[in-house]
Image (cartoon, rainbow, N blue to C red; front, side):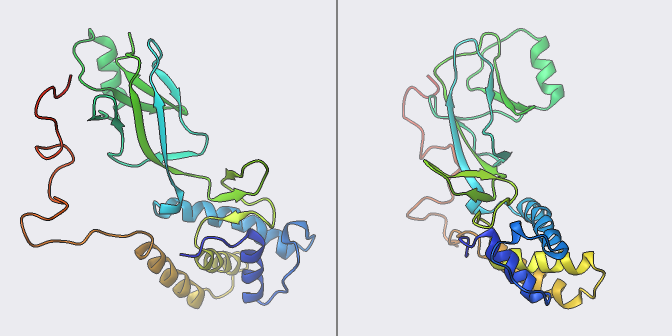
Length: 246
């Protein structure tokens, strides 16, 4: 999907579609309609970001545990962890969790026993590791997460990411056609115009964008395949013969 349009280009597309004139820099305009369009884009983008786990917004985060330290910062653009993507790469086991508040307090109240892998709980912008007293060190923990940084801000030496557009040259990581359709619909709703056609256009592009956002595996009717696609993540095909869990 197209993901390289700027905020200014998308806003101008929506402006023209609702019958207004495009401008060289929407974020520098004093026109109330254009100011409103820029403000609506912030809400529209955040809404689209929540609708689907877009592949363009997925990232990987890794950290190594430190002896006696149980709390680690989540990425600044962290939105949500991708389910079942967390692994302890040191002992090659999946992370246990996420723990509920009840499970965490239960574990805190009992004596620490043998734990074969790390358990985790996200809270207040951190990820907490159990056992937390003492926390084992040297474990490489990795997981994929969805970023809330759907806007890429060009900069030197490197670009940054944020969850709202603030300048016309900001790069939008969401599908540009979907953004312009959603922005047009939001503007028509704000002005209490008929939205029947705009709603249909938006839904059509949304369904297409979600359907074409990522590749899918080929389904096989046989019991086995060259890639052993029917094997579980942890099974006889991918564990060592000896020393498992050591």
